[in-house]
Length: 405
Image 1 (cartoon, rainbow, N blue to C red):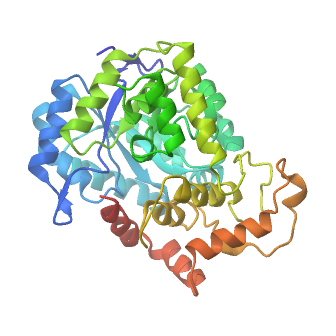
Image 2 (image 1 turned 90 degrees about the horizontal axis):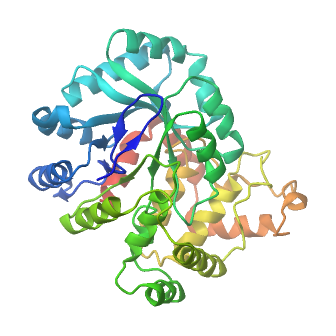
């Protein structure tokens, strides 16, 4: 495996990292023997970066059980839950709890979890930078970064607000221009930051069944390559990406991803292959229920509606055939616009003021489209549920994660 250098830290990281949020489960709990087998197989085959978080259920404690015997072979990354921080002391208490869970004295890479500019500024007022300086001086963390869940317009400002060493962003061929975007990723890399990618397969969506026309484009180009291989290869082809984190829960998934990581170097995809991925993306875009490009020109909404994200999640439900009452799109809706991971920005907050209409390049009737989204995902009394989520939402979040698993 060819490793990738983080300029700011000097560490060489495997291009495939093990995301420990979606470990194999049995009876609603982590299947410890199977999960250990997977993680050790990954390490034996060159993976040296493992990512977890305080909010990933029992993940930190499980890793604390199995990693001491291979500690020297891996970099451990976990995250401070920003939404849990009400005062300075909370940061120190959470870090100490995580060190105990992970059964280590020092965390290699510590990220501020799920932040945008507003969240970072809130933490700064609670002496975030003092906390980071002290945690490093005390030897509790080596390197600091953040995982980003905000609009691309704010990404550079968050990058520049502190001397970060690493950043985690959502990035895949379908979501190329959301959150940080390709341009933001290039900017972070130019400053020497390591760039970690979450959702390289869009939570498994891009490795599953795509719309039939999209499947045909891939098969015509190379019938031996799976959808997952196309998606992961596209991410790792980017020279600015340090490591793609994949939540692998079967040996087949792991071996497939290892093969891609071993054979993909920056710039190794041919122009024909890149054109194939672009064609698939265009096919998917043409299948959209709402012709929204998630450009964000309609923002900000005076009532706080996250218009692009609401429409993106609605589109994905129909693009990728989500079925059942509790499905991936439903969970994503409450995770990303319902307050589980950041600000509340659900479609039901729209009052029809119309300020977004004149700013939309596609000239969409945004008010009408948001009504569709509201009807699809919301229910009577949802505002009270969202209020509850905002203040006591983490047990619910963990429940949703278990459903996904």
